[in-house]
Amino acid sequence: MSMLTNNRKQRWLLPVVLGFIMLAVVLGAFLG
Image (cartoon, rainbow, N blue to C red; front, side, top):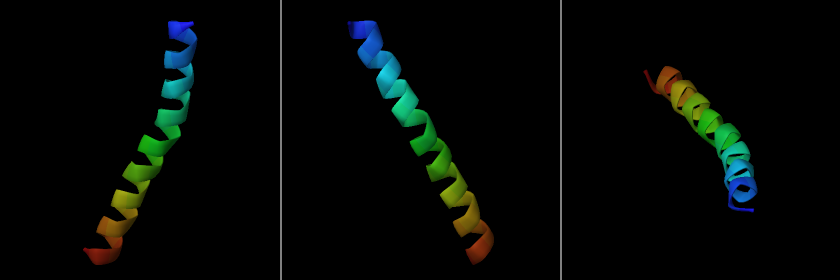
């Protein structure tokens, strides 16, 4: 049960982190 919850959390976290990095790169290119 604990492993399932952890796996689901990681699956949700990965796209958020990737999106955040992409946003930072786009903002950096836009401002820089």
